[in-house]
Length: 227
Image: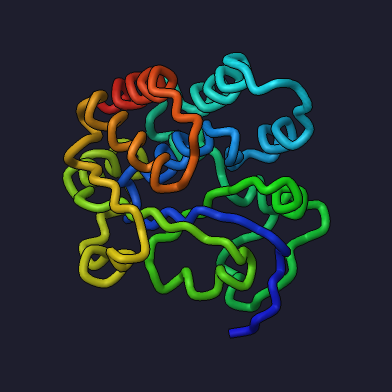
């Protein structure tokens, strides 16, 4: 693997999870922090250009963008078209990362690195991570574990063409000593438990601006669509 860093001073949080486990939702929770950006070029550009004080309104703006990405209840099968996508932010398909191609010049990633901001990346197999250190010299890892119940419930209503990956548990998960393990089935159905574990995740990441009430509101909207 090449040792050239393609995003000098870059920072990313890798979320490893099987399809349907709620990985993008958890990324949004983390990206509510001032230390991270949403996987939306428009939202990230707003944050990059923001020069005011970090007030309540700052976090509420980000939450409103997150809530706006949720589809209405009668369009759950349009979920994938509604959620934030890394390609919108990064400008490339991650399938080509093993070529170690430089990021396009029009991508905000270099500005994110200059300002010390994190972005988030989805993977569905630990093996995909080996090339990412060439892009971001600072990586943190989150692995969504115990997610079969929630994912099996979600996939048919969000994307009927996908099935839960039974091989992910023995073959695709992140090593325990290299990540924060987020228990999905143990917390996702209960707001208080979910919010507490997100608070633990913020501590793990070193983010000091956890907003319990805003995470609560987001989770209530999100889980309400799954009931």
